[in-house]
Length: 274
DNA sequence: GTCCATGTTCTTTA
DNA sequence: CTAAAGAACATGGA
View 1 (spheres, rainbow, N blue to C red):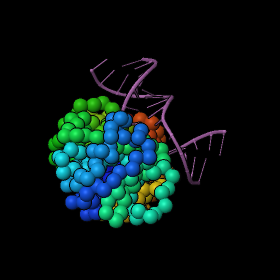
View 2 (view 1 turned 120 degrees about the vertical axis):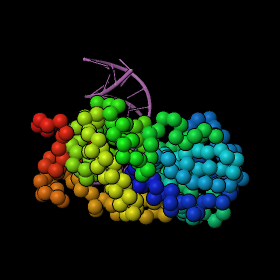
View 3 (view 1 turned 135 degrees about the vertical axis):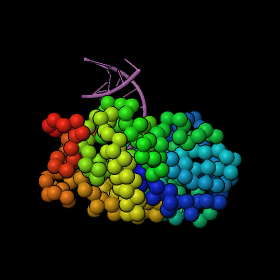
View 4 (view 1 turned 90 degrees about the vertical axis):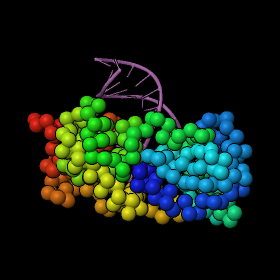
């Protein structure tokens, strides 16, 4: 469920509820969602006040009044939801943060997500690419020049650029008319500039719609997003391109399903397409 | 039963 | 060293 727009929406809806609030208690139902696995998370948080809540890539970063931090990653099916203390505890609820009058619950059936303790380390950890919303035009071109991988695969690499996932890479490539199989280092400076703009536009629109709810994504208030209705290619295999009516194609790249319009999206290096 | 899923990481192979 | 391909993680829905 979680790419940059979804994670941003969770942060924006959660932030006003937890900033300046003290954690009264913590209940850990599954210790193995926490890294390091032997951390006494309850002891670390109990009585501490949340002084900041931020997003870095797809990470939701909590800062405590001790200046220590931890982050939640939602993985594929994770949710971070505000609920009343008397609300039924649903299956796959692994963690509860109890505040005065409400709880923040982490639920994640597939458990690809979890909690990572940072201490005073940087949330980017030196292994995360730049934030796409503040990307400068020449910056992307420079990053893409470092790899021959298909542009689709390169943009999914969080080390190269942070926050993009399967939906928004497909949408941004379509918006900029770039074929997903184009080698990253063959993307011209001009096209990289267009792509930079497309990435920002797509992400901003998605944030404005509260993200994409395809399966079970909801924000911290349990409200779904609406951007899935505005997708041009993602999850639209066989349906007409909104620009030219050509049926949207689906291929597999880097093990991920990839959607594009074979008419609107071209490869920079001439020749036929796959 | 089969295939697929908004993510990440590791292993194998070239 | 780069990188492609595949598998792995775990669960649920169509």
